[in-house]
Length: 134
Image (cartoon, rainbow, N blue to C red):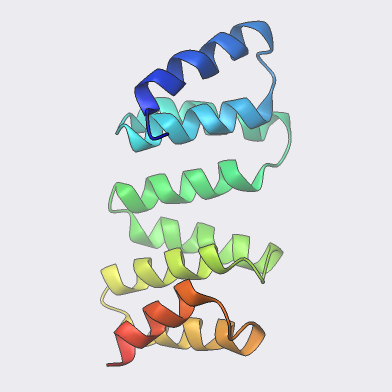
């Protein structure tokens, strides 16, 4: 419903009862990230990851790096995630976006072309690739 500030309140209420719920920690981290509170988001993502690996918390940390303009670190994180989940199109789009921000357009194109070989029906990847190759 895109009411991040309100959702933070509810996520924290749940965490008061169940402080080790990694799904809720990750969702709270997402809410903090989208409201621009990167420090709090990082804290929640790390708490989730300290419980057990959570792909969404790991993606959240990579997105924080990207949002802070730390594209090299974000790219490293997205590459690691792709190695573990090579069919996750979202990772390719975000990594390609990092490459573009680092003036590495050809790397972005190559990355997206590699994904299209795995799945040529993904609209997000195809649209991004089309925009880059026009």
